Image (cartoon, rainbow, N blue to C red):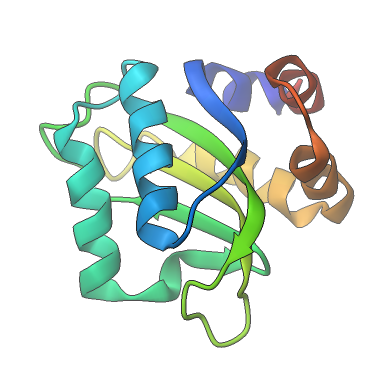
Length: 148
């Protein structure tokens, strides 16, 4: 399981204990981590924000967890993830899953190639213990060891 997630999280894609004031700032952090890890261009950050503005807080996929993403587009260079933990949980406007402490950025080159990645991610996020470990992680190597 870990190798799929670990590969999806490129160099520079993990940001821990971030101070964000709102969902938009958290998306900017998740997006810039995707840019830094060479998975997307800068344009993708705005595409993720636009998707949330259009479609609403359905991106809060589980209690405390948001999956920031846009549609597959030319802004996506390679399928990948970013992982952002927030030092203070943020309200996203979801009826049952707020507030959010973990934001995962997802970039997919098409609608099909990231199926394995999504199942590995779902498996990880279904484990409360693993999510707690991620939220308490203080450095990138801790996160990578949980994922492998």
